[in-house]
Amino acid sequence: EAQVTQNPRYLITVTGKKLTVTCSQNMNHEYMSWYRQDPGLGLRQIYYSMNVEVTDKGDVPEGYKVSRKEKRNFPLILESPSPNQTSLYFCASSFIGRTGANVLTFGAGSRLTVL
Amino acid sequence: AQTVTQSQPEMSVQEAETVTLSCTYDTSESDYYLFWYKQPPSRQMILVIRQEAYKQQNATENRFSVNFQKAAKSFSLKISDSQLGDAAMYFCASPSPLRDDKIIFGKGTRLHILP
Image (cartoon, rainbow over all chains, first blue to last red):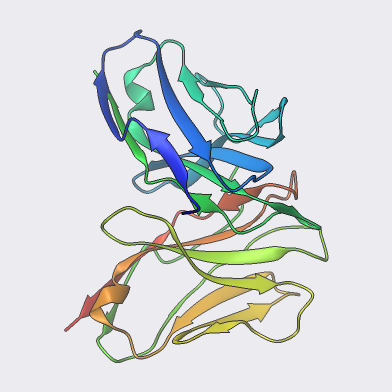
């Protein structure tokens, strides 16, 4: 089944404790992206990647890191989480067509709470 | 900064009636795709419909159709014969005006279906 898998689905952590949210896709998509969803703000892009070793900042990259060492994986790293990073996180992937990223396949979401 | 605008944070429609959700975007490209995604209470992001900008014909998927006005950069979603299962958050998505190869989202419209 074509899918994007992200883990953990739920996490409660404390300020400053490094964490990684993993994301893996099995569709050989070039494009991968992380979004955070907050009430009233919609989905805001954190980072995205057009291919292996190619990453770029989205609209809200502060406090996050990513890497794209393999095509299928795109982990999101919070080096020192803070309460303002409490949010619902989505990983998504897409093939790249003539106009860029296309239909996104989303993971199920990761609910992160930072105390 | 987000430049996909959904001006209706919430809307309600009577079951079996028709409702239109509005969206405006900003891009300098001539060839691009636009998307509507649905997020039901399960939080899963689901593609509703996709429009190719160079196509004159508005996209249609069963009860869902779009009114695409390229010059006005407007991309509204019409839901006909509304059903209880249509109750969800709806997000409009377009290429970013800063980097047209990535996808950004509006803040969403929460749609309530009244029985």
